[in-house]
Length: 147
Image 1 (cartoon, rainbow, N blue to C red):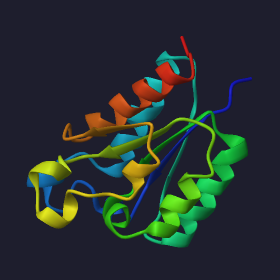
Image 2: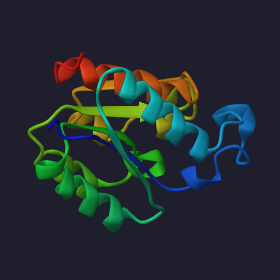
Image 3: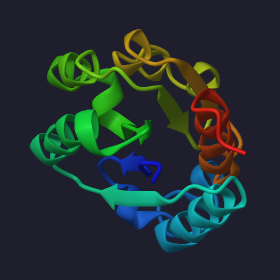
């Protein structure tokens, strides 16, 4: 049996749909979860979908992905710009890592234009709203050779 794709979402993403919808869209995190699961299912894969506002929880889940996932999709949110600890955890993975952002960080404030996560990512999907997650699932599926 193929291991699932782990999808991790960082701080404040639990507020999707209500927090700055002009930037992040109106889809809720539950909507995003459903879209990810549906996209993965088309490729014969499953998804473990998690969100935390706590850096340590995200790091624990990255470490878990070392043995439990075929690929990792991560939207680090604000931690992407600040967390060397998250980068260090990601660098321990031997699976594809897709960094995902709802907005396009390169088109936003200067401090958002650099993410530490990018240094460990296989690829980056950004700027497509909730569809960024689906595109990241598709990329991960392709990298692991799913249908």
